[in-house]
Amino acid sequence: MKVLEDLYYSKDHVWVKVEGDKAYIGITDYAQDSLGDAEYIELPEVGTEFTAGDVLGVIESAKAASDVYIPVDGEVIEVNNAVAEDPSLVNSDPYGSWLVAVKLKDKAQVEKLMKAEEYKKFLEA
Image 1 (tube, helix red, strand yellow):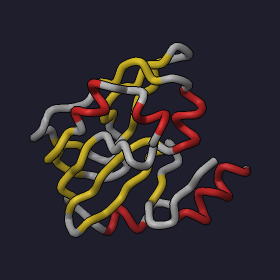
Image 2 (tube, helix red, strand yellow):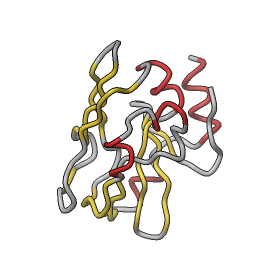
Image 3 (cartoon, helix red, strand yellow):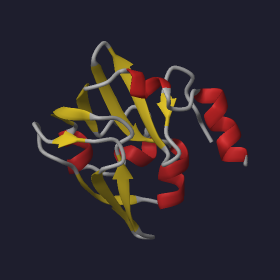
């Protein structure tokens, strides 16, 4: 499984890329592989506020429907409509196909997530 160095990871197989007080959120290579071919993605609207652990959206594949849990508190400031229109993008490029961008409420939460090496060990366990 591909794991990128400059991202943070949750135990729910969600990645977070931080740029200032903005965070891009998507699913990991492991998550997309486990789900199979994504057929539908339900994402929140801009302005929706979340608390870490809330269901951010749903990804449906031929295998299953899976909730995506947001690992940080934040307000949605962008939604990746390209992914909503073509869910297969999360399979072909899981790290390039973010789902939403949020304005972080507490940047310290990001530091509690796993870095790449920790996530690799988590996957092996």
